[in-house]
Length: 195
Image 1 (cartoon, one colour):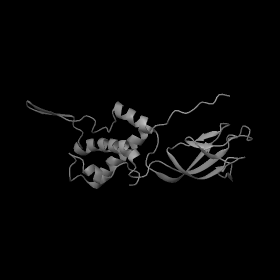
Image 2 (cartoon, rainbow, N blue to C red):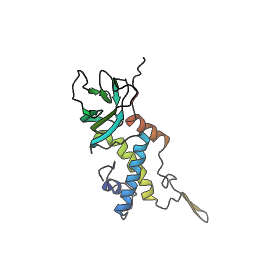
Image 3 (cartoon, helix red, strand yellow):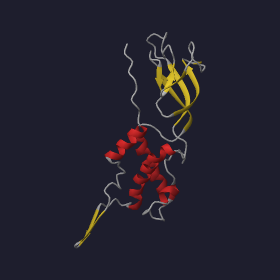
């Protein structure tokens, strides 16, 4: 699946992952790990081409797009009318994390919310170095259940005891991993407009 942060061969090549792990199970583990990583950062990380989003603007000049990084903007429709790329009049240009329009995104509309449809490409392409932290995190999260599918955390027979990784069944991310992922891929601080 193109939306996964890592591939089945990547998971199978990790030390300790059983060679007989069914590909469907490996795929499900990678899907769950990818969803967890992307859930932590609050957005998709894998590139999406020509994604369509409908937003409602305000009087602010900057209209932030929900997914980052924005790589291409294909089309912008404002209240049903196509807007041209440029810097004058009602046109728009790219801004930090979104679209810039000098007169804002609801000027002249009164109190009525104005739908703005944006078709754009966002995320990192497969193999991009920026995905490495997310990729290795997803592999680490998927490896736990792959190497310990029963979720056993401790086993004792007479006086012999063995302990296992407790996170394998839950696919949970540590606090430090979640912090690193948010720092790398989460929303960056923006500016504040005072009026």
